[in-house]
Length: 240
Image (cartoon, helix red, strand yellow):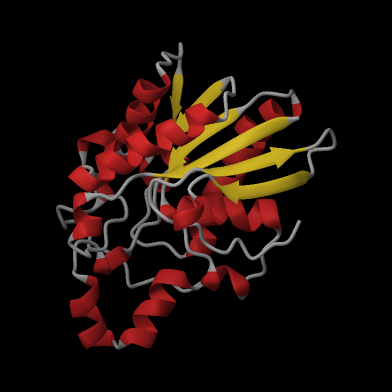
């Protein structure tokens, strides 16, 4: 039996401030660091050899993974960083306070922007300092791959091809995989893995710093899936 562990990064500073973050490279809050360490402790209790580690380009996912590895006392030869696993780009909402934007757009509209399948906010001006084109960490990504805004569908269209090409073959080869990523890139993966509909995906919430443990059988079918911290679990919208 082989396993996939999905971890949304611990709480970031902008999570704490209730700001739309997207591709902006924001650090973990103190609570987020504690969440990452606890995630490592929970994973360690599974007594599992993890063969490959993946994360996005963003420091909150990278730092979460490093804190997990410190807790596991594991020093892998390679951590694979992929921009395809980045958080969804929130367009012109980037950097703005979620509560303030509810006053501007209304709570229903903000919920649609945050959770819908194929609706994206208006694009972010390319001259804005929060645009990925203006950030050093993305200088090696082809410019035509860098978004101005994204829906979850757009995020899915970059996450899933990467998963199918680089991660699923490892699982087929009986490797245990850990991915440290983001709320929406993990929502995209869950949509694929659990065959969640375009409508129901709006109901899926991914908690910070709580490892989602997925068990596969010999035929690459999911036998079971659950959060390691049951006190902070969320409904996966699937039954096993």
